[in-house]
Length: 312
Image (cartoon, rainbow, N blue to C red; front, side):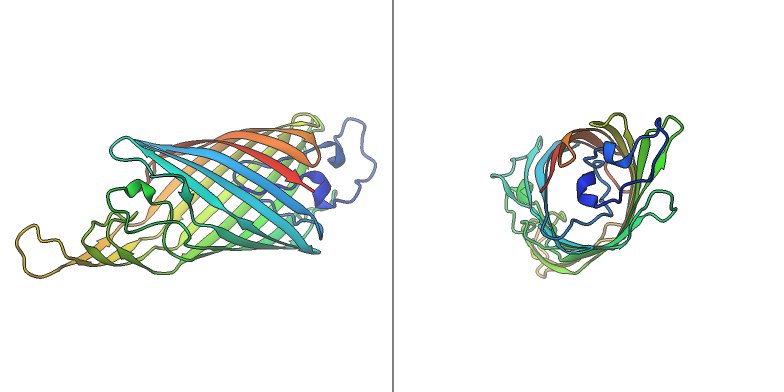
């Protein structure tokens, strides 16, 4: 998901005099597209609060969740934050989650390298560092695999986020973001039933592969308050390796069986159309749907979502 900074928080300089038919940057209010992170940072002492509610729909499963961006402008050009995640799985072929549980929470820091100025070709560019903490349950799930809401691993993500503005022939603004990231996961111990498909008798470890993600997003300023947005995404994950011993004895074998499972790499394309409405430059709402097309070793999904963006 995405954090989005309304115009007033971006400390953009006043644009030079423009033609009467050209929309000024101060007259375009934004909430942000559904997925692409902003390349902006908050002014020192300002907060951004953006909760998302969503439902990841795949065959036989609805994964309801919330993801909230809580960001703070620490100093000029540097924002830090926390992203708590909660979830609940409803499945058609087994018991649902026993209750709402913690997902994997994240810590985030973003440093802005350059800033867009009207009339210049240089976009706003920032480097982002994100650390995913294994706070969600992932193994020892017993007879409730739907309780698995985490990965069990620490994951470091490094991203380059960029943002720029174009004025269309009708004078309206098209804001564009391009984000590229790479994720690196550590190994984790796995015991029993887990999100990696192991059974009750398994004891071993998992090593998720690296992940690459790219997001190209467009926002069209329809009016001062209304914005149309779309994300186009591509994701690729390297092979995840599960190794260990299975102490089950289905064939009267007297010794534990060695388990080595490789998921293989996976990739998928996605699109996320959305509409934004902004009551003020500081508060807005987004309603959108992410569609992941089933790709190589990847299950397709449809995820409707709603988000509120507030900066103060």
